[in-house]
Length: 126
Image (cartoon, rainbow, N blue to C red; front, side, top):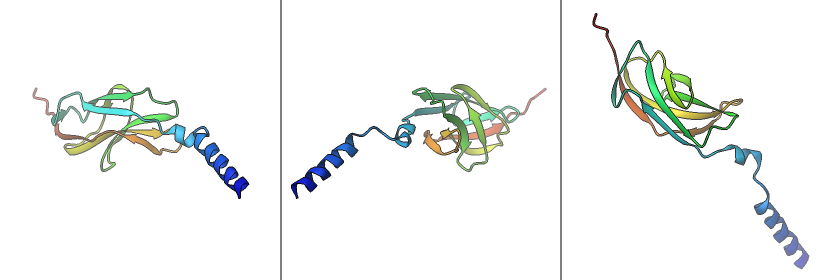
């Protein structure tokens, strides 16, 4: 009985002190920030283009990619830290997210707080 308890105890100790698996190490804790470069909440899309300011800390892992997407999935664009311009944005109310995904699988790793924008179309007055 004592040897069984000793075996169970040593196995439990080994499991709790073992190094993290690759899957656990893969889920980095990112601090994501997505903001409109034009101000909020009402913005004008010039020719359907909206500029965003993208911040990611810590630095993005090599096997992760950034994306700006809408809640409904209608808009999805690759992003990079700094300024990113999203094209073909229709007018209306949109909820945008900055999303970190795994490059190979497309699995979502992290998501920013929502950014709600009322997008208007800019009409050139010539």
